[in-house]
Image (cartoon, rainbow, N blue to C red; front, side):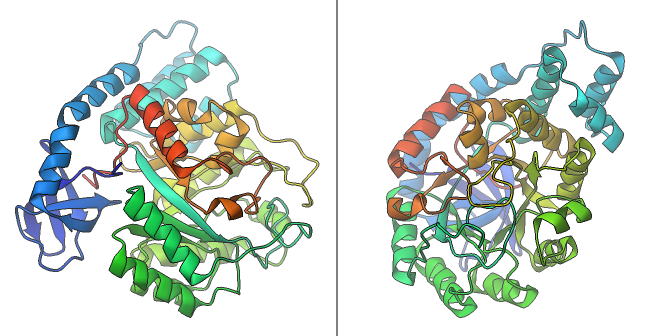
Length: 433
């Protein structure tokens, strides 16, 4: 199964190409030599990642053609907005009407929308977010793989199950050969076109080793590579970008500096934000966001988190629930509930309706079995599947009973494709408009 649809190059203007997908035109940045008009390519995250032979592309497109439009019809039907507003406050209706006209809510307006616990009110908020997702981004849903290469971490974040607080956790660090074998399986066998390489802040993987891994992937396995190794230093971010990484996943966790300092001993929010801002300036695609439901966090903090993610030019918003983890200082606190998470997903879509991907995180899927479906119907349009070798997955214990920790990759794919099909979503990333 391919997690992209081949597109045909219609126009080339320096490093930007215009690509046709069944009559829809999208732009992509090209770093492949020798690309010409008429070539077929795969794109992910707005990047051309592979040129493919015309016969292969045409065979895939023939299979996709009917399905592509059928899925669009299902998605259009499910995203239609019932304009019945009986029982909904006039101010809520005004805010959502403006959102549908392309005018995102101000902070105070979003706070008002998310403060409500009324099911009828929230249902309209979620449906409006889904309407905006369909209006601007159609039915494309990013399906990325995530490969967790080490659970060693030098930091002591109070909520994290792989922090140095968790003394009883068995540690692992994949070798370069293991990492490349897992990437090969994900790309060549299962067809993933975008992968996140993730670890704790692990000094055991040198930047030289990471550079070599990324360069080898670039030479041998066509895929868009995101890195998620924490605060590795601005210079090292540049080195990994030069090696071929094009995405950077790092949450700021909370926009509240005082709360951040309490939860991250010896760290500062300013340093974390500097990493994200410098990474964007280098050219990285940014995936960022925060934790929802942290002890001491307010709704005002969460709204500020959403706006900070937008300010940081998030290509993908990533908000996950706080889930207490054994062996950490916050082990005794309660997790956030499903409704609060759906509010944040919808809020992210209302604030950034036209461009951003909004991720349904594995942590949310751990919190609720219906998370992926409900999140996708509340403005979400991205999921990640775990391609870490199964002998290591359980040890990457960010929180207990993590979703997908023991499932075969093929099982994850089959379940995801079935769900996306039922919602009219196409497991693709067509690139930028």
